[in-house]
Every structure is written in C-alpha cells, then in structure tokens.
Image (cartoon, rainbow over all chains, first blue to last red; front, side):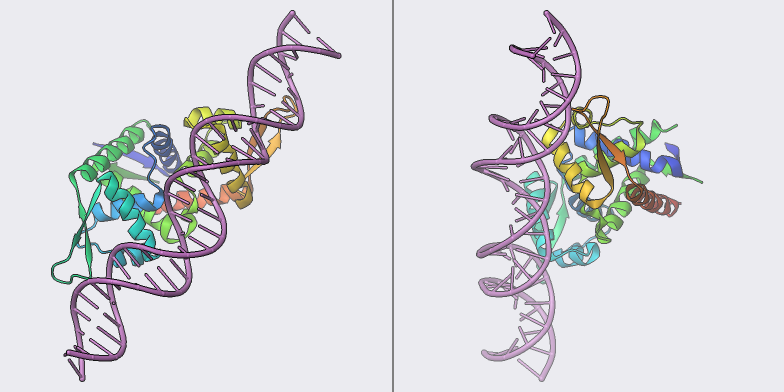
Length: 115
Length: 115
DNA sequence: CGGGATTGTTTCGTAACCGTTTCATTCTTC
DNA sequence: GAAGAATGAAACGGTTACGAAACAATCCCG
C-alpha cells in the first residue's frame, strides 16, 4: 500500500498524526524519546547509551532518563554487555514493537486521508 | 514534487525527521506544542485558547502556558478579540511561518531520500 | 598488578510543565 | 443596571526534566 505525499501535504501529515497522538493521551513520549525509540528499532544493533547520546547530540543522562521512562513503559529493555561490562545494550521488546506498529498504522491512515 | 510513501517507510520518515529536529536543537518543542503550532498554521482562523483546548483534549492552562512559551519564541502572537474581549485570538507570525517552512523542508528532504 | 581512560548512573540545583483551583475581565440575559 | 455564565490568566503544590559534575564499575595497556 502506497500513497502520494506532496510537499504541501507533509506538514499536514505531521499535523494530523501529532494531533492524534496528543488527543489520545499516548503522546506522553517527547520528541526526544520518540527519536530514541525509533532509532533503536529502525537501525541495526547494538545500541549503547553513549552511542545514542552522540547520535542525538544530547548528554548521556538524557539517554539514561529516557531509558528509565521507556523501560518502565516496557517498550525497551536494558542488558549489560557481557563482552564489555561497562556497556549497556538497549534491546527491543514485544511491547515496543507493538507500540511502533500502531504508531505506523496511524501515520498510514492519516496519509491515506491526504488524497 | 511527490514521493511514494509505503507503510514500511512511514516510521522511517518519522525517525529521520525526529532525529534531525532533536539533533539540531530545534526539537525543544514538545509534541503538544508542535501539535498546537501546526494546528494554528494549518487550519483556518480564528483560534482561541478554549477552542484549542477542546480540540486537543487538554486543559486550558496547558494551552495558556504553551502560548507563553511559543510567544516568547516569537512563533505565535496573542491578540484580544475586539468583537468579544474575553477571547484571545492566536495569530501567526513571520517567524512561525519560517520555522514551519524549514520543518516542512526537512520532511520533504527526508521523504525524498526514501526512494 | 596498577594508573588512567571509558561507560553508564547518580546527585545536585535549577527550570519547566502539569492539573486543579481561584481570580479578573467581559459578555449575556433578565 | 444586576446576576450569572464564560473566557483566559495566575497562584499553588507536585512532578518531571535538564545540564554539569561527581561517582562506581569496568576495561586497557604498560
């Protein structure tokens, strides 16, 4: 399934999806957290705190706290790296996959309305 | 200019755009604030605090404070309604238009990369 | 081994945001 | 006009997030 996305419709798509996220109350993820979550799920592992901090141009505590929040939500998991026990590897979870799948469905649904 | 947006690419688009916004530091707008900003700019006026609160399913003080922040950033303006001086009309600004234009450019640029 | 570097977390003080409640202003209706 | 409704802003207490710096655990290299 594909849809046409024009330049004038790009902001509209962002608009409707953001509105839906806020209105449904599921928008409790900040843009930073959403960026982290998407990065973990859409780029190949391994993912570390330091790597995410560098990629997103934020400080390490920001990543740690975001992982605290998202870990409590169950959408990510932390595992010590056995190869280098200083590292913490950020792992995907089933709940996270479901969450993003639903989010993707919203995007597609809204994009489809942009005919 | 149009691009094909498939289901599997929707999350990827959200990913790259969010990453860009966070990395550049312009991502200091929360998802709520972004939803408000986009709503003001993409739907026909007039926009009031009460109307936005109802549309976004949040309380009025949330809108008031978001307008405080975005007003300080210069991306929206508040004007008393002369017809009904209880109302405050949320107005667009040049800075806000420029901000969203750049944001839209990022979306389009990233969407174009999704060939 | 052992000093230094690296990684992730915690602490600390500050600032922002939230929801509820309250207030000041303005309109509407009698 | 006066009473009541409506609107947006402000006050208040609690929660959360931030950056900088300090910290503990671990690795690395001599």
